[in-house]
Length: 366
Ligand SMILES: [Cu+2]
Image 1 (cartoon, rainbow, N blue to C red):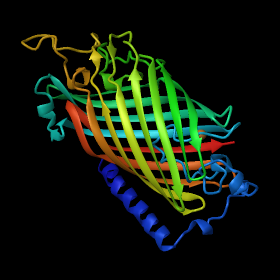
Image 2 (image 1 turned 90 degrees about the vertical axis):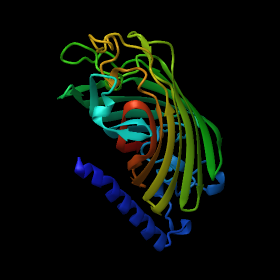
Image 3 (image 1 turned 120 degrees about the horizontal axis):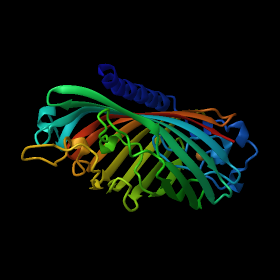
Image 4 (image 1 turned 60 degrees about the horizontal axis):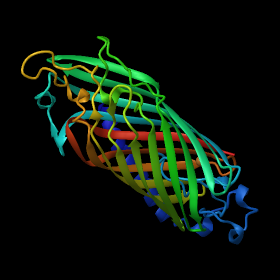
């Protein structure tokens, strides 16, 4: 784990270095070559956000959000895109409120505690625009999670893996001008992911180890993107609203997020980014009766550990992340990577806090 902790400052140093170099080199919009796919496009006739005045369909990804942002862009009529994105999140310490607590303290009101958790996601997405106003997106993810538990002095690791929920979204263009644009998104997530992942003893794993929400969910979002010379920037506000109750008797907490980013162009095929994300999410409503409870004593019937406690799930956080984006001006391929960590988190504890996260993906547009 030492290596992973060193990774963040290393990436930060690299990105800051690249940013300084690009500023030193005095890259200006006039020195940026128009991608060849954009050459036939007269600036005055185009209605898009990009510097080359062709937007994503001209394979200039400069105005796109960093890797970790979903639904950040729309396409021109007939535009098609396929994407693969890998996401990783590491949790290594328990929190109560905004302070870290020991694993022993995390067991105070329980018999066990989680000491570590890793989550990985392989996200596949496809986008298609039936018109200039509307872009459709279908997305799902294969998830792999592992959690290290400490139950009265003995540690054990549990794992879950499988496909998560499938989200179908529509993004509607509110306006599009040369320097900025805005769109509204509405996603509907179907409960295709399992909420029945079990431990070797047959009891159901805790809420964060399950693969889906078990409910139909609404995912509204509003995105704004702007651009000025070698800088592009944007902001997105989004929410996840879980509708009714799932088959196991609970509803995951709703969440809301506001994220804002700035990209700095390095040359006509790369950019670096910095992003700040604030989010807040609620506790589980109801409870899964097949998650383990304490079997005797004064706490009988209470959740065995915080991971199976519906009232130890809520929180809020402020995350800082740095990214690098590389694209091919000829083929429409983009590679983007982003990594970050919370600079503040306040959790309904005891609850594992996020240590750092990463997302890396490739997109291909036609
Ligand atoms: Cu797309």
